[in-house]
Length: 356
Image (cartoon, rainbow, N blue to C red; front, side, top):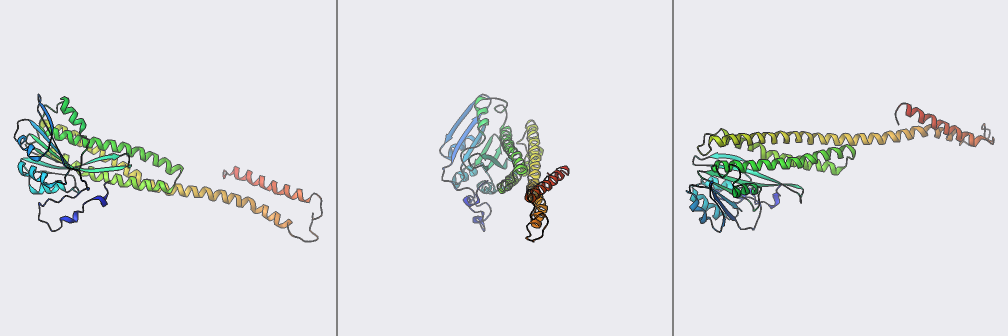
């Protein structure tokens, strides 16, 4: 989860006119990186360019072009690309505001998508969130990411090697491939969360500790974060599948239906895990109650056993002069034997009642 303390506050935009670009996201001093992949079935070109002007010649090329911008703090880079490709100012405003909810907007000659890329950080043991903005146009796809590094390397490898139909298809299929990679990454996170759910259930049943309860609350927060990212994704993919945009061919629409089914599967799994996590709190309280009951049962049995023994010891501890057996030489061992017999009888009775 992103740390709100490290974010530029959204309140900085208050009072500004619509379309004003203000970066709202994680603080980063990295310079933006612009990479271009241009291809068709027989040709492939990949390069990293130093300035946004180097992207302009690819706008009207007959090939498919994927322009990727890593880093959003340098607003002039995004503004120059937006002006050259004719993007609406509100689109540019949403790109640099990383608090956006996943959504799709069809502007006719291009489609604007806001998605969430989730990666499980093994070092920090939490889910890292990054906003990915995609713009699908005729013959091009432009992606905007908050920082360098993503989950799209397998797609780049397929493009380089020409495997599958990605080099034979248009820009709409490239957008499908990018969305499919994002949804597949959700499955990876769900596998990790599923293992944690099983481990937490075992811990809560066998060793209910306050640390386990804290782990449950952390799990619930991560599941809520995943839900907020996946639920709107369903609407986005449904809009791409059922929309009448000329930018998406019928042949690619079939693939969007497939990734839509995967999204529904992710949502169902998230809801299942959320139900299980909600029940874990009850499990924790029940385990604590059972543990307390076991302790109380042991203490009650011990107290019950010592009640008659204490009575006997109290009777024979009275210092009356004419008490029976007071001067009997076998009195002491006889009383001890009587106490032992009472102890044995009570233990046998408890075992028969299955209280022990």
